[in-house]
Length: 417
Image 1: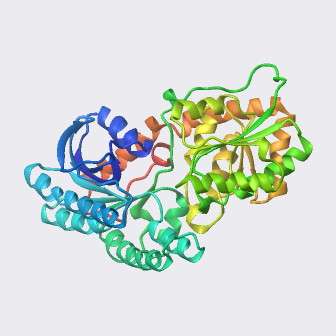
Image 2: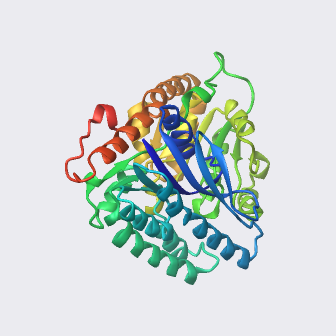
Image 3: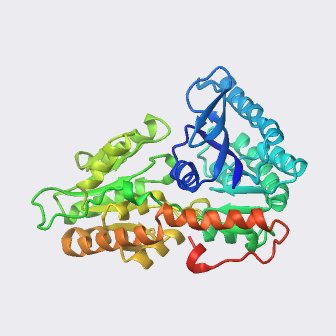
């Protein structure tokens, strides 16, 4: 296959479901992928570079944090995306793939019709619903602006982009069901949950004998306000009452320093400030080194509708590193834990969450067994080699049978991801 990938990801892409799944796994199979991306670093004018065996049109960007520069950054991105017409005129692509774009998805649909190729859309997150959620929950700095953008993008997505796309990739089965309620055919969508490049993930597991040291509870991920991680601080207060030698590590950062300060202040108000460590953003290898020493890894995802359809990478990474997990029961987490036996799944409830953490701290052999089962599960089910098989098969189907939108051949053993 040869196709054009237009994505909201910046160049060079770092998300594993772009950089690994497409930039490596599909490219290694001989598929030629050309890209249209905006630069992550400041860039005055667009450039053309080679990456992962394909050509990339890298668009200019201005990262200064002023309102004018933010608007200019969006305008530069839209203008750069218009290169799709030039690239599709010069080369014959089997299809165009658009990921998490809205305005440029409209031009992508037009280009696909003009050059008579299928248009595939990849939606990794319910962005319109998230804008509306932030406006309603008081999480947006400009709620009126968020609300207006949310309604506009929601209209574009469900009334134009998804109905006109030849096929749609979504993040989870839960998201697939949510989208189907807007009149989009289930058969037109393929869920692709997050995975990991298993060969690159170190297996830490647990030592043969329990270590006589502090018991480490670890959270790895974003600390933004909308995740409501004060819940985890309150959970840990309950853990400390039973396990005095425990410490909570929050490995990650927020949108700004205020997110980290908010969580430190919450810990201090409960009198546990010295037992809670907030690291801020760290390079991946440094963050993983904290996971190495963890006794329990946690994945609390606030059960808001926009988050319930997510596929948390942290849960899969914990399992891949051989760590027992405590998570709450949003659909994708519940499914992974039930299928793997790699952790404990509880409700979004402080007492239940604390009890599960204490159980694993007090029973290290149970944690060790769960960690081993989690690693085996990820290697079999969540490995990007396997996920690439399913995505490749679906894309080949789009290429070979564009007109048949009702009877997509689907082998659960081979294609279910």
